[in-house]
Image (cartoon, rainbow, N blue to C red; front, side):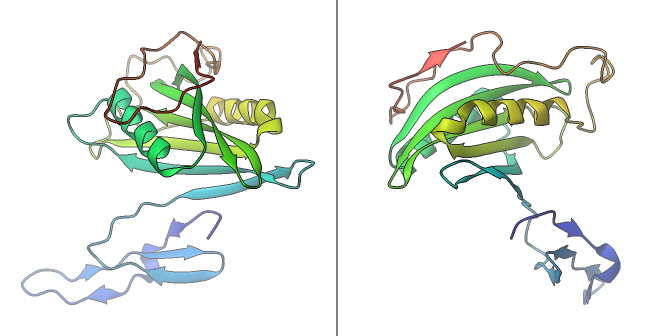
Length: 208
């Protein structure tokens, strides 16, 4: 499904419970349908939006989600694990670029990688933002993908989206929104990719 998925607690169905107030299953509405998840399921909503198509007919696709990280992980160690997984699971994966960003008072990282597919060569930009004070330690994830020829358009679109971002719970010392210029997608260099058991393909990699 694509589009927003909003919880609708008002239509939740009660579930019997002994010795305590009855729990209520959370209901969700999406694309004109309503459904309820089992009580022990966790909401891992992914928002998907489609941009304009390129000359090849392939549209740009944006996905936004939250990804819980381990208590002992930092943003960087989590990102390194994500890259290793992508390198193992996606044929033709090549890491091209890594950048630091600061968005809505949070540090983040943006990865650009290339995918050699049967239908052509595609690129993706993957932005991960630090969970900071989130008690559930959820990283905000933004992924925009499309044909390689649309790389500059994807970079510009992701930059605008990140500049518009508002996240509750920013640290008190962060300046008010709008008091600093938006962070670019190409700031200071980051540390080298750690050496895991599996080496991520990096033929065109550059740090900026």
